[in-house]
Image (cartoon, rainbow, N blue to C red):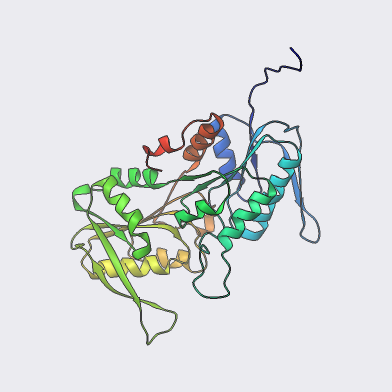
Length: 325
């Protein structure tokens, strides 16, 4: 027999960017591993430098970075880390993005606009990513932009489990804040056995750049309403939807979302609203000054860690969601 035979074992390594190291450390604890020692800094002109302090040849590398503000810096850093892994001869590179930047730009609304979500996928493929792992993409079709496997994780079981354990399900109504989230709201409805309502919105032709809520489709009178969305950015839509529910006789309104972007006036709007609780996950960092009394933050780290383990073991990520993901 010619050649050389080896009995080497697979090796999982977890690498974190500087965008949100706290989440990466939490995922590492769930996996029972240490983060790879990494040198990363910015040059005077803003260029990013990265170097790993150990050999990564032949490893199964997972590089985790949530695309928080300043988003362009952390996207670029993850791209550079991916390129460094490719040139360090990592066997397989999985980019873990709890929050996928530019996901809202998934199609052209008007001529001469970019499809930036597709550009993001192309950039990571060019950098050397073999796989993407994301949580609650703004639009499911983004999975098709990447030429390779994409594991799309759902926060729904985590959020719905929390809500279901805290409220009386007999008086619960799931509410979609607009037509675009009806499918997700319907999954919530099935999960909790609750009826569904929809906020019907239209732009007022007399008031440019503003949305006016016209009516609530569904029975919310005297009920606890759970508004479900993928992200809260400026909180304008959510607060307006909550006001419409209260005006229609809702007894209470709870808001759930996976990604707490919380830009601009979001915190003040939510703090001053009649919403009793805002439930989000920690896919994005929420500094202390952006927190408010109604806020509840659930950890996404156990789900991300389980998905990483399934990928490493060549298992089934779909099995984490009862075969529905």
